[in-house]
Image (cartoon, rainbow, N blue to C red; front, side, top):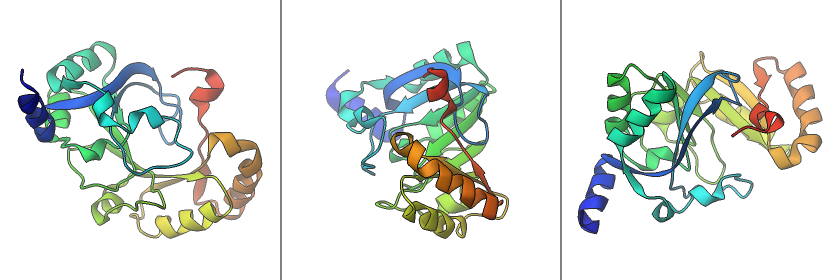
Length: 210
């Protein structure tokens, strides 16, 4: 297939820059501890300095993979798929979510919400970032708000973002891994004073799994 044709398929969401896919336990947020197949899509320009998957940022490093292959592999492992990145909403997600739903798979997304919402999702985890804020539709779609706490000002930012999601949205504060010993006491005190929030930990890192 010629390069131009490949790029056309990516633009349509028929192929996607797949960084990796793996079966593991969901380590964070509302569904922590649940088995799921993760599909990590390459490409992100949000630019979080503490990002732990910076190798995902350049989509050109990750080969365009047909969604039929992605879906067939996912079905071998689980009926729950988590689409993450990178920033998956940089790409059209309707073809992927349609194909996954056709196989009876429940689909979750983890996104910054900075791009137009495409695809149909059974669970929408929104994790806003200061340097590229979510769009309106992302706030409206959010089932879960997961705020990464790197410093004290991030608690202020978290409250600001919580005012923009719907009233049923689950609210989580998660320590940034490299700062966890510093910010965890702040988070604990904050949740005790503001019990609408819950603590999310990156349990997969404590378990030493992907």
